[in-house]
Image 1 (cartoon, rainbow, N blue to C red):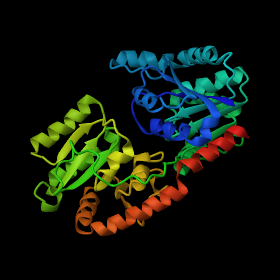
Image 2 (spheres, helix red, strand yellow):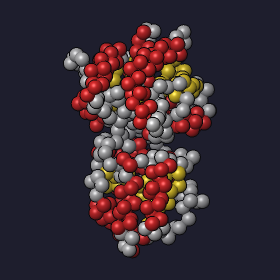
Image 3 (cartoon, rainbow, N blue to C red):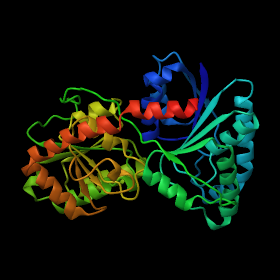
Image 4 (cartoon, rainbow, N blue to C red):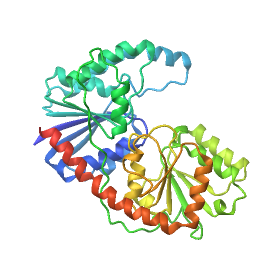
Length: 398
């Protein structure tokens, strides 16, 4: 039985923890002993650990990460920025100590963004020093362009990671494209990451309201946005659209539920904006400790209004599995599985298109539901967890 270690740096709940659960809980991965090593201040790991309790072959451990430290003070942020190269060396040493003598066969480093110094890169270097034969790095979002004064250092580190890694994996063609475009290397030799799309488990879950304490008005259209509440996720675009259409009878017949945590100051900003403009049909629920698919099944419609980039868009995929109609902005990898036949795509930050499609939904709900059933069929066929797990299984055992 192979021993696998998965290294994962994060701070907040997001798509990677869901992906990890879907991957390691798959029957294919019961054949491995799995250790998930994550930073001690990773809020998402608390919920992942609870979900993984029933799996005897999976263990979750924590470590101190130098790359999940946040400073409010500008001077401290500046000092921290210039100390990062030294902290990266310390990170390599920490990982050598954590991995040494534990007989791991495979390391899988899980990166959100890529392009700058990260703990996952340090773990790959440490694994190579210790002689681990299989070293896989997975990119979930996009590759950021290096800043001018860190470009050369990042080029060196990226070149080492490329040399040491058995394989680079991206979760979408969009992520691969950004990696190919923005990842700097000292030597421009062959580089060809492979794409393994995220998978969503098939389910025959019954469509009903699993949130009866929250969704109480059955006579209205109940719509959700399920994601972390941040400027790039587009919750403010929804708020602005509702404010501008406060007298529209169709929009007023809709209840909008913004589900997820976020920075307190930003969430309060949006709440205050709603209050000042007398908006009473937008609700902020915070994080809900319930399976995403059950949350999405409880609603008539799901909105995904990301402003800049989606490395995959798991919430959209989960909505498709739940047969919940989706309206989403056309960003990043979304078009790789959502289109105008199985959902609705709109332009980024386009209040007119958002309003138009919401009203269209209220008038032609059957059309949207028909699309949703096609979406479920397609996502189950092409993007299920078995397909994803089989591809990783093959990669691990090559």
